Structures are given as C-alpha cells and as structure tokens.
Length: 353
Ligand SMILES: Nc1ncnc2c1ncn2[C@@H]1O[C@H](COP(=O)(O)OP(=O)(O)OP(=O)(O)O)[C@@H](O)[C@H]1O
Ligand SMILES: [Mg+2]
Image 1 (spheres, rainbow, N blue to C red):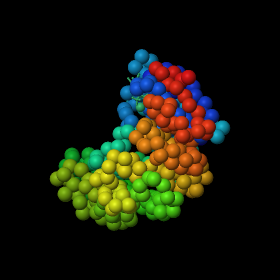
Image 2: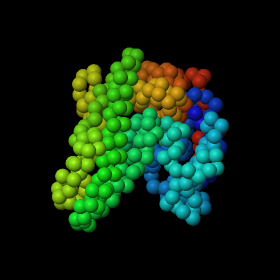
Image 3: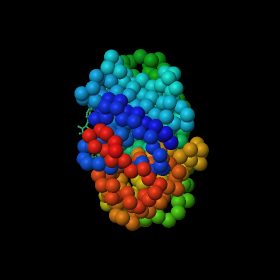
Image 4: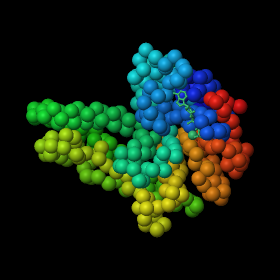
C-alpha cells in the first residue's frame, strides 16, 4: 500500500502530493485532467516502462526543467524513481535515499494494471500478451525481472551478431549459454505461475465475470540444455531471418472463455474485459497468499465499461483482495457502489481537490 505519492514535473503534474486514506482511491475528473498520469506515475514503481510504455522523455512535464520524479512512502520506506535533465535517458531509482536498480523495486512492490489500451490485448500481437503474463509472473516472483532483462540483453547481442553475419562459433556458444540459462528460468517461472493462477481461477467463487482458461503457447522448450541446443541448431536459419526465432521471447499467452469455449479474440468486448478482470482478481488473491501482501491495482477506466450490476460485483470482489485499488473515471457517479471504503478525489488540470 502506498501511504504517500509525490509527482514532480511528471506529465501535467508540476508538484502533486497525495496521501491515500482508503482501500479504494477514486480519481475522477474531465478528460485530460491528469488521472491516468497519476496511475502511470505509480506504475513506474515496478520494473518496466510503466502502463503507457512511454519513453522517459515524454514523461517529463513539458513546461518543466526537463527531468521528473515519482516518489512514494510505503511500510515506513521511501521509494523513488527519477530522471534528471542532465541524463534524460536514464531512470534512477532509490530506496531510502540509497541508489539501487529498477529490478530491486520488484522485491517491494507488486503492481498490476488494466487500461483501455488493453482492450486490444487479444487482437494485438503476442508481445503485449507476453508482457501481461510477465507482469503477472513478476508480481509473484521478483527474480523474474533480472532474468528477463539479462535474457533481453543477451538476445539483443545475439541478434546483432546475426545481423552482422558473425560466424565465430565460440562467441555464439557463450551468448547462447546465457540465453539458455535465463530463458529456462523465465520458462519455469511462467509455467509455475500459470499453474498456480489456473488453480486460483478454478477456486474462485461464482461471479458475473467470465472464467478464463490460460495456456502458454510457443516452442515449449523449457530446460537450459534443450534451449542451448535449439539456439545452436537455429544459427543459419536465424542468420537468414536476421533474428532469433526460438526461445521464450516467442511465447504467447492463450486465453479461452471457459463458458463457451471460444478463444478470447472472438469474445465480445465486455467478455474480454471480464476475462482480464477474472485473471487480475484471482492473481491478486494469489499474490497475497504467496507474498503476504496484496498487489496494488491500477484500474484505468474500468468502471465505465461495466453495467451497474457488474460494477457493484467488481467492487465487492476488489474489497476482498485486500489490495489498494486506484481507479479512474470521468464521473464520480460510476463509483457510488464502492461505498464508504473509498477516497474520492477530483482532478482538474493536474491538481487535486
Ligand atoms: N509531458 C507532459 N507534460 C505536460 N502535460 C502532459 C505531458 N504528457 C501528457 N500531458 C497532458 O496530460 C493530459 C492527459 O492526462 P491524462 O491522460 O492523465 O488524462 P485523464 O484525466 O486520464 O483523461 P481521460 O479521462 O481522457 O482519460 C493531456 O492534456 C496531455 O496533454
Ligand atoms: Mg485517462
């Protein structure tokens, strides 16, 4: 739970200080007021590019000096991430004023989000679904961040070697050993989380939200030796393609609507949203069970797309997660059913009231 959030020169917020005092934090206000920007600020407290996947340069306030900072108090610790005008491409991280790395934040926070852009999750390519899956995994297994970034770095290096027509077998062996090591850890973590999550979904009480069946699609290679052999055997094919065609970076999360057996991509917009909500709700319970603290949930514009009954059911289920839940909407009216457990904040032009 965040006890305080400070945004400085972040997007349209010059200097925002906010102290959450309820389980639900409801941010309401006109289009463009800065609601999603606040959620984006919170989303930078975990590894990754945040909920918009924006470049750092886009996040610094246009009329500001060039840098920005996001800082939060939680469990007596102070966490911050900042970009300075002098080093605009580098995100710095500190915990209690000691510099640390972004991956370390995963040890302290689990943060999940649903945004309007994720309405396209099932229609878009596999990479967005893979990122969604990896956020679910990261929230349960903080080490996933380091394995993922080491894998990405090794992959970039191998792809560069392929593009350069590099033939040095020993060099490939070395880089592929790293890919295999971290790739196996990634595959194992994903498989474990999908198993736990499927069991948690199965155990969920009946709800108006569609029940998903989750499976991991891909080449299915999971142990380090098999992966290393696949990279080695794929060198000339990959050289022709100019990139690495096997490995966990090619996996996909498949989602099926258990009620009627249709793949999520063929489901209605409302059904797709409900499938994602089911995943988030089951996952939140799992995080609480395994890590002892529920994840922070950022639900951007989720209420607006649900009918009143489903909205009320959602709030009820969200209370049970024990999560701190940040929600946005243009109308305060949408959140009536959240009851007294909610702090309602009006946002206008980057200021709170
Ligand atoms: N780097 C920046 N500096 C200053 N303002 C910015 C920056 N980036 C985005 N904005 C402004 O922030 C505003 C959008 O804020 P945000 O997306 O948080 O709105 P919102 O309240 O969520 O609106 P909606 O209800 O439409 O979703 C826009 O007016 C945009 O121009
Ligand atoms: Mg918004």
